[in-house]
Image (cartoon, rainbow, N blue to C red; front, side, top):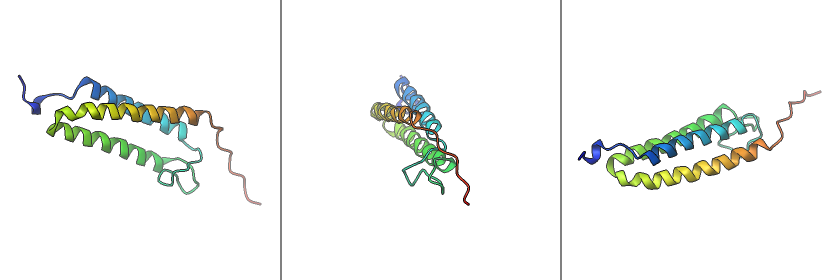
Length: 112
């Protein structure tokens, strides 16, 4: 029987990470170029762009990295992490669906 250090993360956790990544991509795609209310995610023109992408990727990647590091110490903890990943993925998917129903941004009008 392999020791805990040689175990692989569960399929459920690996699946939840994939679903979380896909939901994050869908949320970014649905937000790109639109008006952004969150000051951490908006650029100077109050739109979602590269800065928002960097923040979202950093948060998602950081969470997955923290879970992977936690797995090394407490393998049983990944079940809770997988459930959390799935819940967050569901919320991001709902946000992406909502964003797709918003009108596209209006082009900037030149000043006279």
